[in-house]
Length: 184
Image (tube, rainbow, N blue to C red):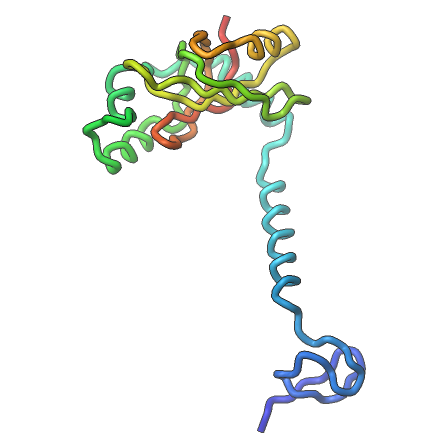
């Protein structure tokens, strides 16, 4: 015997496998697209809830500016380990990444590309070149004012930029440095 349930609309008994109530025509089961839509809304809500507020970001930037940088350089071991022609293995790079995540660094690096990620807040992504004996990086730079915005927007490939920020991970054999500021 088929399992039965009551229709939420008319209250009459219907088979639990029914998609539409035979008595009132009310849809009983949610479609796949509706379920997917709800999942997307939940994921977006969770992402927004997990994002730091502007005040938290300002506090973190101030803390990073005050902090003493770690004794890490963008050349030498790190550059050799993360270069495309590296003799190191993925596990060695993963272990090095775990070791350096969270470190505050102040590095001078050669610019490869610049783009604005949030014009209103003055946030830029600067990709630096991993050529030579310097590791490539993806920098998230927060400009303090219009003057710094102009400096960042005037950078060209090959320019050198000095930043102080926090290492948050790696991507495509490049070091990710976020919450960084220009150093004069």
